[in-house]
Length: 196
Image (cartoon, rainbow, N blue to C red; front, side, top):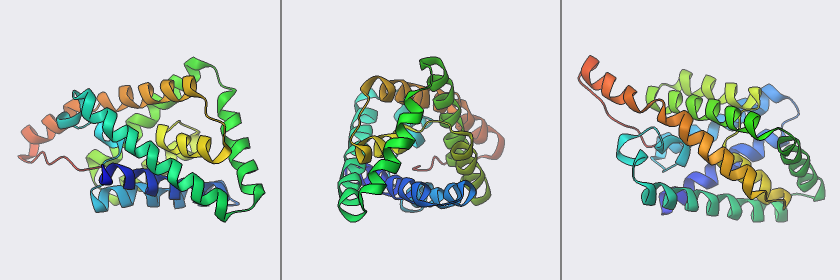
């Protein structure tokens, strides 16, 4: 539970830095700190666990991970609302409301792409792949359920149907990569799953 909570915290820190950055590329670069932290400290992040065979087909375990990721986001949203001025909440509101304008199909496809990119990062366990996967999902506007949850909480505008679609899409995108670990095992003799 602590590991899942902390994953929500560090992804929220990445989302804060992305939101506060003046330049999109700098924001995307700074956001990657969140996933680097998840992998370095072995935190349990929902979007990283959906492509892990030990987690993907255990709904109770994934639900608990997701729940505590969201609690970590809520904790950080409350801290950041208190820390930053009203303008920060307005920025979070603008960012999340722009996401709500997309069609459900666009949200789903976008979140599947994000799930794939996070799985590429986690499965590769390579700093360059992690950096480029995160920057690609941020700059393309792909939906990440934990980062989006942070924005919702910071904006104080929670949209449950939107979040459910993103959670499902992230799962589907990550599940595409379930066979990758098995292929790596057969190809190189090692199939160590990482915690991301």
